[in-house]
Image (cartoon, rainbow, N blue to C red; front, side):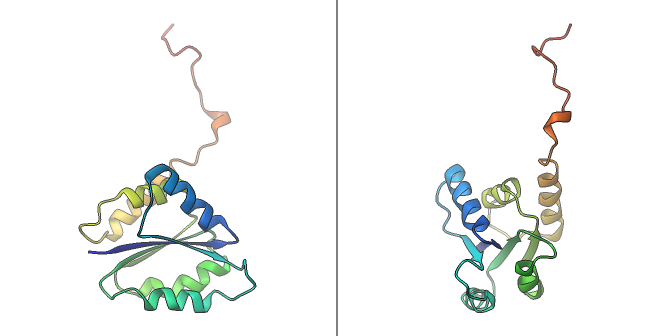
Length: 138
């Protein structure tokens, strides 16, 4: 089974995230970045060409930056494609977890929900963490 992971964002967030993932996990042949609106061109045709190149049985995981943003809106119809998942609010933890996930079988909706929940726990207001000084019980 083949899995493709598409990172899509306004400006260069997608390629920056791809660079960070590959810094941590090595080069990823199945990871693609779509930086929207950086060349004055509409992304509709780029998206259409990308999806035309995916065989029907390829699993496609799409990560976008903003729920109500134009990039997510352009990719929204593709969520209906078989073996395709669309997740918005992408961050390093969820993309890294997905990249490291074995691709022997398709990811279920439940597995995707679990990855999203796991990524949510990595969003922390660190100033409010109660960390003990010294680390020993007193």
